[in-house]
Length: 475
Ligand code: SF4
Image 1: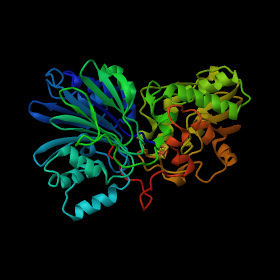
Image 2 (image 1 turned 180 degrees about the vertical axis):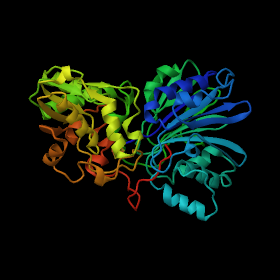
Image 3 (image 1 turned 45 degrees about the vertical axis):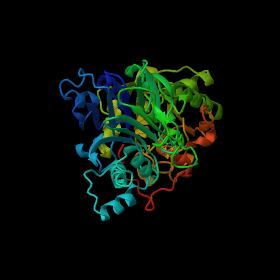
Image 4 (image 1 turned 135 degrees about the vertical axis):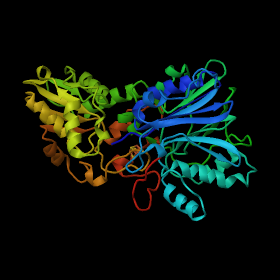
């Protein structure tokens, strides 16, 4: 299971480059394959990007970018899905259309990108990447003649043809533009820097590092533009209408951002990720208590649900695993055998914390189950008397077409198995998942109906691609 991507943009601050770099660092968890930075300099838009972590990529940034008073910049951290790796797909993408430079970065997956691309290619478009993001640029370019070269108008016409999940940041020589798709699958937030600067970021955890204060979410279907030199953001269409694009459609924010992806210090869809995860643990304890001596989390993302579970159960919380921070994230290596080795290298049980005890392990989610089983075995080898498992979301049974790279549904441990069969495969003494209703009861800022739960429920808010195959995503 891979994360998607992260966006950060700043306009109206002479330290925009440094602030965006900090904002990308804060969102490194959203993508570790590639990073990139696009700046609006006196010589036009310039891009610097490459494979690797933000610190590696930006260490070779051109001299002077940080100190030359550049007022607007935006950046991207990326995880590509299988087959879409390589520096060619690193973002932001920078092109020139009808003589105007336009840069774009994307978080999400455009579900109708494949047929749009086929149409564009048939009519002569030449693509240089295999990401869905480039489709947006080609659609905009097609509209430029009809709009008299008006970038905002062309963008609005292009957006009307897109389906699926897309938070976009675009930079032109005059403005930074933020877009969130009408379903609002992915988070995007607005922050204020001083009197005239503004920041936009996927997660609010970036704002303190961008010297920004959280203002609000970018609304689903909103197009927000901020002059590169600073000044009030303008929301709405190019001709001044304060409308949202895409027409009325169901808000479908990704609940899995709260379960797993986002950092606990972030506000996501208006709710504190920390508080939601604590509530998920408490609700799980109310729904599925266990007879145990110690509650332990699977660090890091299971930490706060485990804390909530232990508080509600009035059972001591302990750190039963120690984490080796110098081992890469387990899903970086696709070879199953090596991934299993990485799992045990990354998280090792602490025998003194588990020996002779009835342990309840709280996981944020179980995907294939291979890593969970390896951890259960390791706990038993370390001397745990019983191992119970509680999971702070419902069973994952279906794929995601909206920016999360789940394995094939047939590889998901819960795809066709009963709870008893999963417990037996994982070799646990008992197993329980948080219910769908219980999970949705933990978010407060929006109605429970305003979330996508398709990977749990199979109810897709947007029609999946006709062949049912998730596509390489841009961000
Ligand atoms: S299918 Fe799951 S992971 Fe994908 S957007 Fe919906 S809730 Fe999020």
